[in-house]
Length: 489
Image 1 (tube, rainbow, N blue to C red):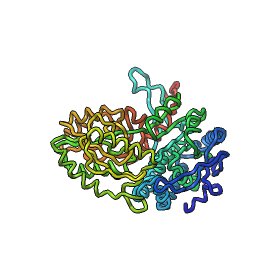
Image 2: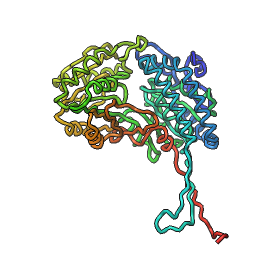
Image 3: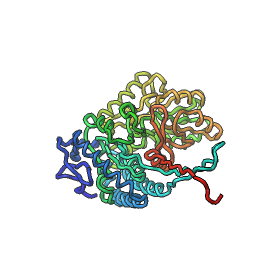
Image 4: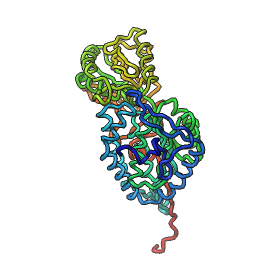
């Protein structure tokens, strides 16, 4: 990918339509690094008329793409994956610069994305139609057969977030493409250049013109227009609950796949392996500075082992390196000053209400040193609000029943974790929690990408995971053959 000449128009990053990187009519938008504020480049700001052109192109291109044999679609996906893997270091550097992701996580995101795309190609080739006889239904004669295959929906609008601009874009694009859809990709304003890198890999892999288009610009200008456009047949969104709820209201009858916010709880019971629990909790809470929907965002620990657990978590948090991605730091600057100010407001509210600061208290602009809070109570904002930053509240409970009750009071229901050496307790807690996924003796996280991934309540709508995403972005086609008189009878 080198200096990105393939998808620049002059000195400005282009938007993708009909296989070409173009310049929009409007003034381009600057992209600054959250690491040091430096200018990375300029991206296009599309108008409604340019969005219309993109959708028309996608609508037309989808017809030919749907007719292309799946093995040929899969070959293009695999080639795109190979390009990403070969250039993981270059794209990893852009992730460090553009979204302030730590070095190890940046490179891992690219490699994981390449594997996701390859697996999607494999899964698409393995999808098979089925036949069903009528005689299995009570009282029906054996006089008809249903032939059931899967068909694409048409044009998929994919909207990705800033925190995984490569992986969470690809997790929408690849399943949609293998199912035979065309895709209009709208990246978040932060992280947009990384998503353009991803799209360029598909272009270089030979994706037919118009099958994958990318629009850029302010959500306040084109966001609603993209969602409400009559050309859209499916919307796949990852982002905040507030925005997701707005999309759901505007989408009408268009089917949705929504991945929204979370307030994932780690429940630690008194018989847990506290060393393992502490390690998993710290990794789950503070990786990418807590800017993950599946980050552990609160610990509900039985009071009898709370002091011991905190004593084990504290030194692990204190060892986390703080600084820039370039320096190899684990905790890096947050995506914006606005995000940092919000995290600080949650910490201040907790301290004012008598929470105890075990670790932390230092910040510089949008860089916040990791914070560990003890004696957090349910009247504090940090017990309920999603910080998207490096702060972890400890809430002491008397037993598992109280822990589950507090966890379930949340408006969110993405994931939870339970730490115990008693499998019966683990299963009982897992069954009682109102979330999409429960991890037993492990941190909350998305993946592996073939696992189902979903949220309940205000955490999402629909189920992701490679096979599940393919099925969500396709539909059954049923052909019923009515058998006439059998000439052999």
